[in-house]
Image (tube, rainbow, N blue to C red; front, side):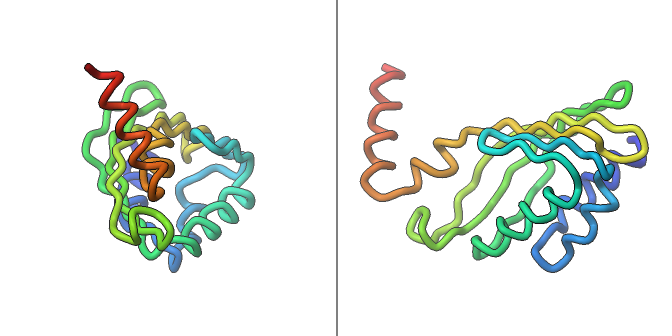
Length: 140
């Protein structure tokens, strides 16, 4: 495993609101970060994003489950466990996802893929029930 990818995997599994300075070890200053809800450019804006994220949740952890790497790119399959006071009655939510990374000495591009509906909308009372019912009907 390349050094940049090893740092990413190690630090994401330890990431918390108390150690966000490690983001500068993981990411290049010009990092381009995307997920289903955000497009962030630059390490300062990414650090601010994570500060806001960790200030809103009771906890948030990542478990790296699989890594595939080739020629300065990697796909990292993970499970995020988090608890937010307004989602799922404050109980933990488990969300699977995949990150596509491009790197040289540090990660320069990070694209996350996950189900935003499962993360947010399905965790809201009433709305969550409606979405889960619709999903069941579509799968029949």
